[in-house]
Image 1 (cartoon, rainbow, N blue to C red):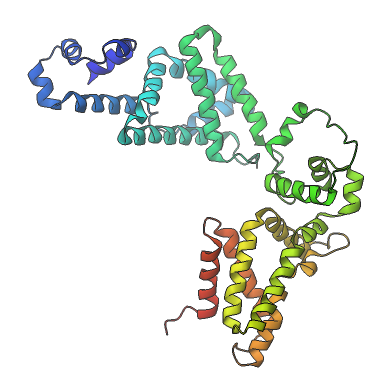
Image 2 (image 1 turned 180 degrees about the vertical axis):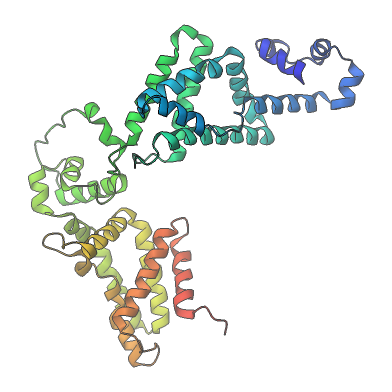
Length: 410
């Protein structure tokens, strides 16, 4: 095994010429044909095991690097910039050494050639991700720092690993072009963009204002400014969330002058109401139609749940914003001229139905209809918002069975 690995690492160009020849391996290992085939049976099996070993050797050793990172941070008097530079310089020679670089590049290039070795490569990346997260766990402990949207811990590790691997490739071909200082500068540049130390839950676009320049002022409103603002709001709520989105940023995205946008939608809650009021009215009409057709109360609730779950999935950005706005109305003053809880009273849609069902003896009448409607609706919404990977029909069915059929076996 050692002989095969050395041949691959010392003379990788020969793989293109004649491949990894058994004769060369045996000669380098000072062994014999009989020993080789007794151990591996076939060349194919031997090559698989060599590749497995190559991948294992390229995998970072399982280790807890947090004590080392903490020591570097302490020696830098808590200065994260100095600490990052020192960590990069400390590990530069080890990571960019010719043999180590060749081993890693060959492992990544050849590894996905079979399902088994592909799993090994993925395990290598998972371990690398763990080491990166350990480093930044120490660097930003107790700082409250978050990653700017849409980055997550997982995607941030992918970005940083790809950056380092790109440097390894360039260093392998042109060592003079890649220095430890350059790598440290690049890592710090990524951190400066990715990390939000102010706990504003910002978007990565917010860190790129210098690239954006001064937006050109539109010479005329879009032909349908209200529609343009609603489309822009959907994009901004998806990107930034409710609290970090303002009317001004929506107006910029829609290419509508801010003053005009504020005349159309003085507040975000009014915008949310406008975006959802048609669907909301449709839900009420559907309940009325189901009652007219003759469905019983239980069937109408089930059908209503499916429609609401579909609305949550179809209008994810505005429904997320609605929940945030409702929470804001709950613990703070109502936002401006309109309360989203009054205008989009989703629990209220069920109240007339529940009152009739209580009067007709279909539903228990020991609790107010308003409270029952709120419990049913809030349970469904909670399920839809926390189980986004499930289909609307599945979420609606789960809550229907739970709240309408109960937990006890009859």
